Image 1: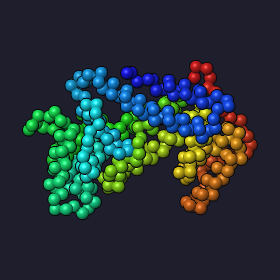
Image 2: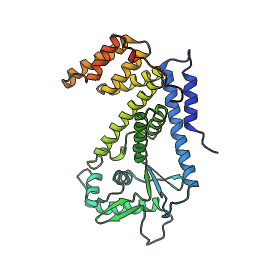
Image 3: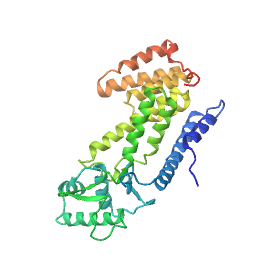
Image 4: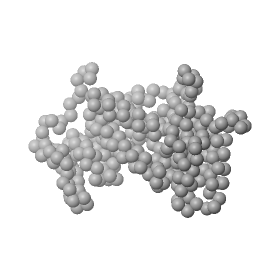
Length: 326
């Protein structure tokens, strides 16, 4: 069975839920999240079909394994989900996935897996984990032939980027494509890219080893990028006229991340465009108070200007549909 066209289905759903007299904004947000989850499953199905139909490149290369690190670690090879074994073995693979393409010294791996207190048998256990993972990742590899996915490199190990895919890279690509589309005014394309990127997330990135010294900076980078994409998606929703949907999403977002000024700015604008001027002003003033009390700083100029424009009903704040053909 062929996968459906996700963007077309999402646009159709959005047209239905934005008709006058439909459910309130919170229900609309719930429906939107359901659509996002369906899109994630649909994208995975599309990826499977693409991989099955596309032959190797001119050099004869094609990804041998796909790793999903935006949540609990998953690995797929030959179209099936792999059993990655015991927690320490999964943690080893997660650590290597976070550094895919770069060799990781065995000493660093041991330090990360045993949190600075390795037992005398740590090296032996590490070698056993590596051997087990090689059998799982390349079940058809002939005995005594070199591993292609999880390779030995000097005094350590690495995952070869030439034969693996990682969902973090796809998220980076979707994010870049979305911001570029926003810059050129292609809001619908930006919205689709942001949503596809967010649909890749299943939980905290590199959940098994998120606190490891080697992985923590990448975890922080990915989380900051995810939050910026959530805000970018809501900005795109505002540009399409989906004010109530954006307001519902942003109200939930700012409760969890109250110090993110761009999120507060977008929420205030969404509320104003939805006819809730008092609520829009309350968001800005609450944010101003919290910044002063918790960080000892003033809001950035954009928020101060927005408050003045809301008070004066500035025409520039009103939403206008894009020109025909735009």
